[in-house]
Amino acid sequence: MLETETASTAAATLPPELQSPRAKLVYLYLTTNGDATVSEMGESLGMKKLSLYSILKTLRKEGMVACEGDTYALN
Image (cartoon, rainbow, N blue to C red):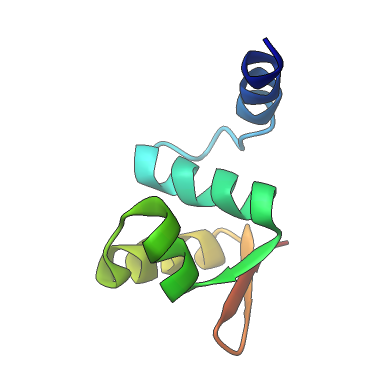
């Protein structure tokens, strides 16, 4: 029951402009973990770095994600 409530709360906080399921996944990962490197996200989410870089580039353009060094975090 607790997991369902957490998922509902997280889904409610997703920005409406996020359409891609992968972008939503990355956004939720950063919401949960605070900040992470591309390698950490790739290992945890089972995604290739190339895909993650593309998603993170888009999220940065939209002003949703910031990058400091090789670490990404939500704005």
